[in-house]
Image 1 (cartoon, chains in turn cyan, purple):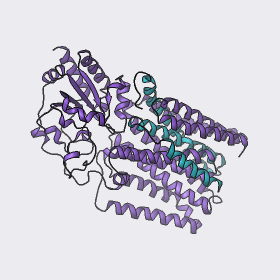
Image 2: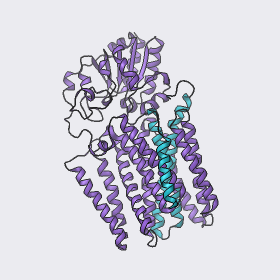
Image 3: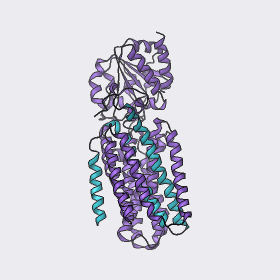
Image 4: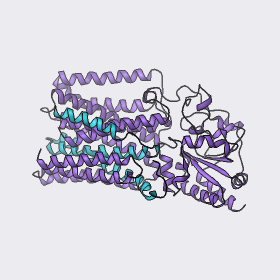
Length: 96
Length: 456
């Protein structure tokens, strides 16, 4: 039951935190949230560590590979995109 | 769960949510991703530290998996050109969805786990994650240009509905007959297949919205995995992405004046005839003439589109701009909210080439000025400047806000070939009295244009 409350509150939080986003940040923000659901890696490791039997272990192992690609790829693409904004900071109005 | 894992989840959740918040403001955006990066590291280390008693071999295998997935992603995403970023987002998102689904598959392989409510959560996460995996892969292929033609046929939506019904039926079977668990591979194939089939008919111009939608779906799948595994980090981070991703999807659809339902089910451009007649009626202009009209203009607007990205012409364009500004020409870059393959795509490209922010205009700012400028130079943009969106109720683009380039006294269009835009719609602007075409690869044309300007 506690978890259901957490789910509800997290959903509201997600909806509220990005109320106003300038169009130029749509792509980087999508990429950033793409990185954040890479948290699935924690779950993949969790089930791998508790998996029993060769099938379960192999499937869970493959899950870690995919999740790691999500985390690392998500971080690098987002960081590369946003570095461009950092470099320009202070030179002009950043679109607020 | 031990206390350290609990504490690390708390800190990590705060950092991840704060990261998203910061990423929605241009000034703090870069700090946002760094913050989120630390959050992720804390979450992973805190959670796996609970398993410190496991055999070294298990740790080794887990490490190999992380190095393999992470390593390949690191190498590709560092090397990939800035212009290919959108499809990389689609690809990594799909992999995340796949991982979310595989968590459930692993749990299903243990006959003792997943009963009642948790089985329900599991099947939801499995379906959503697999859909996102299949759909994102198709989106990736479409954006990478490997899948050019949307596939469409009659009663397609009805077929997808029946397909979904089959998945639901199988899900009911999981609850009633324990043997149904053996059909897990079929369940996965059905769900991944539905993701592929339902993304196939969606046209290119709608792809950004679709990717954002699948991004939200993966977030939701991860959140539901969190419910299943009773893990707060997954639950919070996944659900937050699911919700903020949904909002972001709506913002993107709004920028294109489309509803999410229309994007997913009305199959953009399904009813129109392909563009014809452009080749006969359009006028080409020779480069020297083009250089003259630019050099003697007072006010120029440059409208970039996907053609600029594919040709990697942004640096050449920056050089040309610098030269024109040096000669006293007023240059501005009107950018359509969805120019390129992604909202913000053009802003990122121009920033990379060092074009100052002040020169960039948004739609509302640019449109009243087109009638007062001397020349508009369009580089590889098409659908976002199609006057049919305003004038022709029969056009699939009708109602989308466009850059009103057709109001300018003279328009030069750099265009790769005589084809239609990404949406596959004819563009009457190209045959207008005031429009002149410069055919060729954008970088090549800009290069020769700059040479011609310098020799004037």
